[in-house]
Image 1 (cartoon, rainbow, N blue to C red):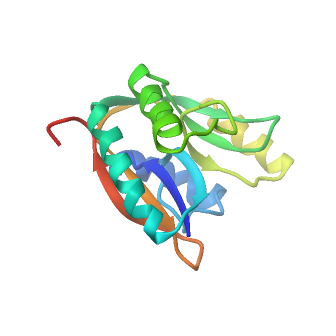
Image 2 (image 1 turned 90 degrees about the vertical axis):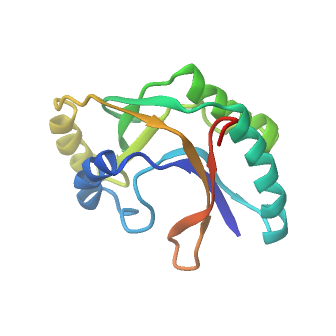
Image 3 (image 1 turned 180 degrees about the vertical axis):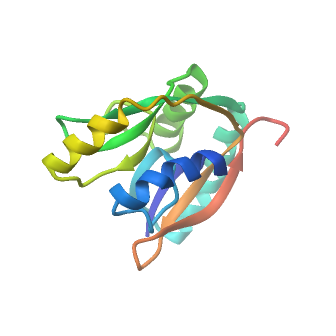
Amino acid sequence: MKFGIAIFPSKKLQDFANSYRKRYDPHYALIPPHLTLKSAFEATEEQAKEMSQRLSKIAEKNSPFRLRVLKISSFYPVNNVIYLKVEKTKELENLYNDLHTEFINEKPEYSFVPHITIGQELSNDEYSDVYGSLRMQSVDHEETVDRFHLLYQLENGSWTVYETFRLGKEN
């Protein structure tokens, strides 16, 4: 099975992201707007039970934190992905690092750029038009994140929550 780890933002931020995703993201129907903490990886159902225990410890060790979206940005010229840029706080970075050292001991493929994708797989012309207009839009959203989710992929390619982990000792 394919698994992944993500944060789902508030409904307000998801609605804002989806206003663009439904037009510019072919994965719109497969997963809600999210911030990826650990990209897709293979594991068995038995391994998922052990993963849950390790993820519970990581969640307990990390506290809820502020998530702030600052602007619309892009990964161009690496690829034509447009995203909501999330401020990289110490708390968010610590959670990300814990997931890559204590959960699955591996170096991430890319450096951590916290973001919520709103457009991908765009042609060069489409990317230029869309990003040219979106980057002028001001975005300033702040909320508290108190949980992350272990997700798994269904046969139809969509993702669903396997288990939710609340941050902090009291959770």
